[in-house]
Amino acid sequence: MMAVISRFIAMLLLVVPGLMATYGFLAMKDAWFAQFDPALGFLWWKFALGLLLFAAGVAFIGGWIFFRDRKRNYVAPRFRKKRKKG
Image 1: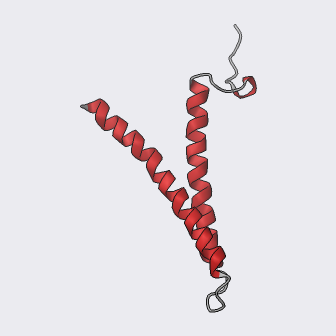
Image 2: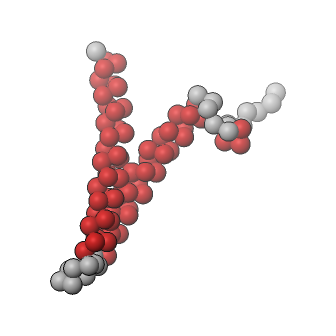
Image 3: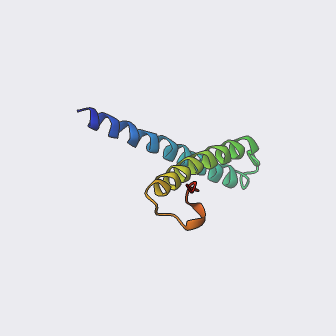
């Protein structure tokens, strides 16, 4: 039962940044298309918030994948951990 709960928590750790990135992308899209409505203009605050959320979500998921692949030795030699000789 503990393994099921830990896998669920691990899944939530990936879903929440994914939702953040999705909302950020949609906020940037809405801000971009709002500029074509003369009453609204360009919503800089919404675009900046969207960019921040999108970058944070993508960076978290990308970092998680990178460190998982590094642990399993799936990365290029230049990204592998340096081991001390001796």
